Length: 315
Image (cartoon, rainbow, N blue to C red; front, side, top):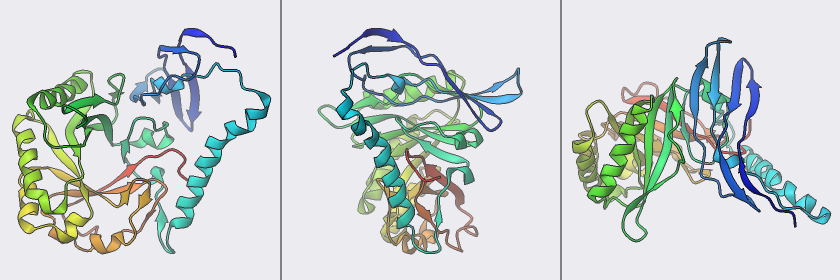
């Protein structure tokens, strides 16, 4: 078996229409087999010399495998692409008759999680919800970073997202999260808010609102506070819980999917959106189905859709 060790950097350049796509140099240490990936960092800037927009993607996931593969195992290397194709086919066939398939190119607001490959639609983004880390409840509650470096996004508003396994945050966790918000803005990003991604139970919204109030009290002026929400909130949440949220957060993004699947019958939940008293968006799954209710555009609290980008989605 042939192995090597050392440090390399990746510099891959491509073009997407009138855009220049560049993967900037990023030092990677490797030895033997593939180094575990830690996600993507995005950087948007304007290329002054050519009048085009340049997208820089410092990506630690471009580490490579130096293991010599026997000829008999070569076919196995094609399985990842087959799996991706199969996922795309399932998503396409799962859409009910009359539903539209969510194409990223039709939207301008996106969630971008670590490990998702860059897509051309990001060049038109007005808002990016970038996963920064996770608040873990394994052992003592602590923050687990999902990025190896601060991204640089010059052309879109940025929401910093933290996935939370618990809302029992200690003071050190809250200080760490708020420090990241400030450092991302200091790096030149147009950070507009902090989004908490937590699956709060429908019957516990008042308690969740109390937790969010503690964050709001510490969040510096000029930042908005947002949360992801379950579809069930609009249909079955206690009015007092919804009222409590309305007094704390600036927006709720209701997700019509779970994992990599669109929730069947989401239309029935969206019919109850008039119960929400806080500005909201609808979270869509790239490649999933979506039929907008006729009443949605007329809802004064509706602020548009956010698309969760995935690898292997149908074009």
